Length: 86
Image (cartoon, rainbow, N blue to C red; front, side, top):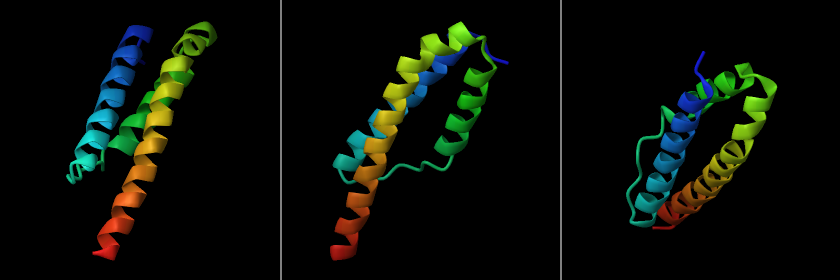
């Protein structure tokens, strides 16, 4: 089990990865994201294992990461649609 600080570090790493991937997608580059789903899944399991107050304290960071992930998902769908139109 990871402690709260390790989880915060992982949240920051994954959020930065999502942001970088979105930026590169805007430049027409698609990054391999095969590991992202499993990384997020593992992170969620670690957060669930935290004591309640600690889990609640990382919730805003988790919500931010999820919002950015959803935005990336929409951008990937739009990118794929544009490719189909070419």
